[in-house]
Image (cartoon, rainbow, N blue to C red; front, side, top):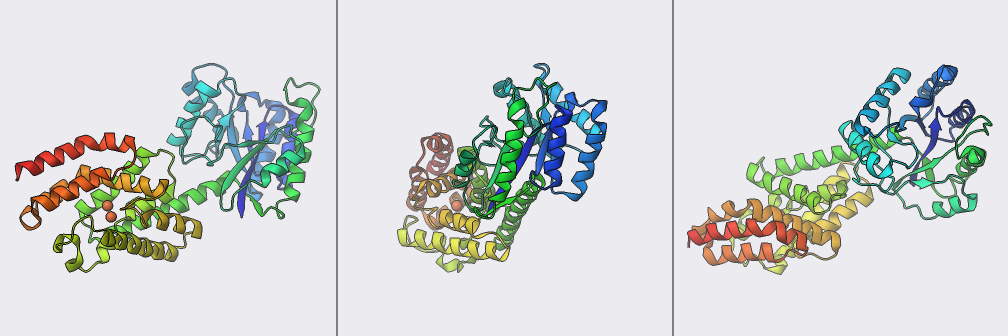
Length: 402
Ligand SMILES: [Fe+2]
Ligand SMILES: [Fe+2]
């Protein structure tokens, strides 16, 4: 199943545009609309009330379509947000921008605002990219031939979330909108699109559904962290290594999704279930023993996978997490190397003292081998650069004990 939000842009621009948008919401053909609060006048009061009414019985999310009137971006956003709340009596469910004039300098401010207020915004291909937007850049269906829209439908991936925008309306001879004439085409295309949902296994959802999904994922992450913490007897030093692995993976790749963070927090879970006598520390095995590392990674993937399954995570998420954890020590593809690098960074940053406190038992050579291996296995240049000062510091601490 693929999930799609259809947003009707420009509610408030014209009474005739509003009329069509309301009709499409009433028939459940669109699941979202963005409002230009600056354009709404008393003439539209009834339509605003109608829209509020529709949110009660239809799965539709009403958002703010910021229309910059000046370049005081932050002030404009805040002011229009407040006007929205006054008008509707609820907060905008999502937020985006009208027209592309201020896309490069104004839109990043809207994205920041959406992060602060924890409301989704549209992915218009402008950074920063955040968890509050669908991963793909929005599909702009405005004024397209229907065949092009259907072609896009065939590219959608299972389990993913998408946003498509249109500018539906009825031709308004009094409106100066550049999209005026094509609004009726858009309205027709939206209806046609709804008719091919089944064929392409697509489900229409609203931004509220999107938020719910994000929250469910976040709760799976929190549950995983709790599971790890319990498994390691709430050991703070261990937790620090896992939390910092999650931190570094996001530093290395800012657009990582929850699967990476779950893999990072749980990557060493196997150690919590291992017979203590068989741990590296208590054997004479080299810390680089490949058989050992392989077993540690693969068993960890299995334990984590079973836990996620029990928590009702979807298969795709489970498989991605298992894939990363199963080779977090030796690396493999891009994702597996990313986790390995984040693990190494967290290690050189935090784990030195744990090993140094065991120097009597482990000996200088084995510890040096471990430190070297953890740093040298790093793949990316960026991670090497970040890790170097940590590595140097841990090595000089080790030298002092020689
Ligand atoms: Fe590990
Ligand atoms: Fe680790």
